[in-house]
Length: 390
Image 1 (tube, rainbow, N blue to C red):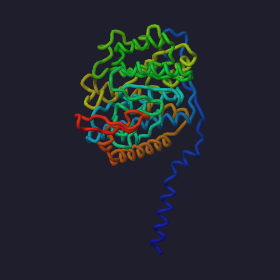
Image 2 (image 1 turned 180 degrees about the vertical axis):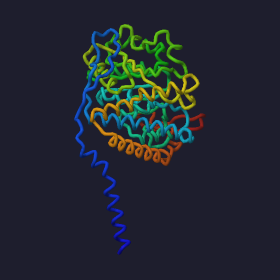
Image 3 (image 1 turned 45 degrees about the vertical axis):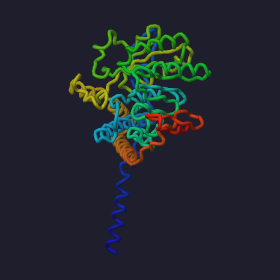
Image 4 (image 1 turned 90 degrees about the horizontal axis):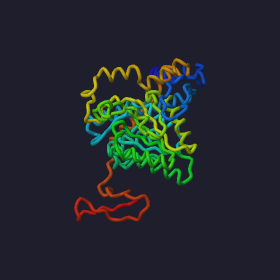
């Protein structure tokens, strides 16, 4: 009897302890919203730009915090899995740049379109795919968003066109998606992203020209993280004012470490495109904490002190957290609870990504076309044949 009473007591005490922090959070009166000043954007061929103040609701703030924290933890887990040789091949991480992917998504509609380069994990998540699908794609498993066949650089979702491995090649494709939006008479825009390293590609300027001639609803977005692979922007470009590179296309230079700044600039740019004025260019000034790819330690062309200074002064997650806590939109305890939940989600996804089976060899030729009858695909030599099923 004594043992039974002790067991019951233990269960009740655990039940009492577990939700205590949540009761504390629930009982506290938080503000519903708060107004913040944001950095003024530099403008090119524009008389006025995005607002310099914005309202953040508690609901949106918590959502943005969770999303940014999820992208951060997901990238750190990918780093770990790569070092364990569970993820192979190319892998480009975006930790440090979370305000870009989350802020851009916050400024557009789910029906709008987005295409980017190979640093694509964060955008894949913000476009609606789960961490499980992303990590499983990185490990080459059947449960991945491209059935384990795309890997780090080739992930896709509804209205998200990758993940493209050829430097700058996604920019003309983005202009083509914008052309489709206009041709079909839809009130949609296409966000076309590229890095500062790709900004000197000739095909980008060709895409600018065609988009301006045809007044396409295309937002060209240069994610300037200061380094194209291991080369600083000052050593690679005669002009580092990437937002002016469109010449005849209006441009904005945005603080890409501030999610609210990115959100407001994106809303402004999307409204500009939807009004029929044609394309606009955005430069997001951001920073990546990891090297260019997993083969780059990231400290041979920049100092550890430089990376640490950005972390301590401009980290996008820290900036949002400080704003929310100081404005009574959230408490430190509540945000810590989100951190714990995110970590668990990432761990569960990582377990799935390592346990899920790899696709069988006979599926190598599947999904070449979306709706075609099955046909044979030649393998490495003429005697090897694979069947392609849509």
